[in-house]
Length: 349
Image 1: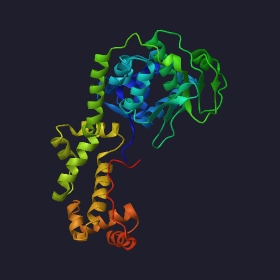
Image 2: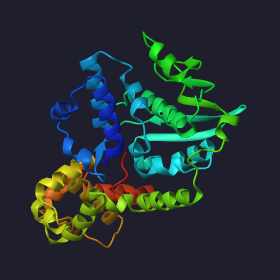
Image 3: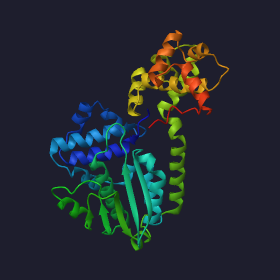
Image 4: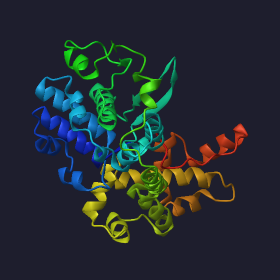
């Protein structure tokens, strides 16, 4: 399973926010098995669940459940990768939010953003998704706080929303929230959101620049276009598919073909939420399902195509994946009268 990831630029923002709250993030990264130096790599990404663990440990260490609001104090364009500069060069906040919806995945894959008319205004809605761990409320609260702070910075005005809504229960101390958002607060709400006046969203931004906006759109679009292809998970899977018919690929051999050290390959796969062995297993499983959709391929032949030297190892692996033998799987699908649809190994969430 490929886990959602967060850009190093956004992770850096989280680290700065936690540091303002008195957290030793270097020690915390070591404790959680995260590479602190990777924060300086613009192309590095961290698993979403690792960010959740950061928030959880920070709250446990400080006792400050509102520590996520510190993101508002460190928010600048660079914290959002190229997206921040695209927002900054937009003509209005409305156009800026539309770009945020379009490019949010670059900042963090675990967040979904929508921006829609609501009554006489517009509502920016945020949903944070975890993988193995439910997302920390500090992540969503910090994202809303930083978004509002960024808007105030962009407009150079004391922008006040009509309403700020949070899914979590009312905190014991609401004063930090009131001081920051300066608007009616709604807790235990159906969604995390900010409701803005239409008039506030259509005022021209001082930083507007149509030429730069087009340039940043191109950069952001190119990043999204190569996002999947540039991920080491995708490149490793492509190699595995090519090498498997020659036998089970070794990790050191794959690393060499990718022009990486074995240790770097391990680290980058971990950043993307997987491991070499897990990726090998997932790739074999997906290819097995594709091959079994081709009746002309014998079961023994499929086993060898998947790099299993001993067919019995293929049968054992397949029983672990599907709790049935390859033959039973093929027969069941044929009996159902449905065509087997190959599943992409990179999209099991």
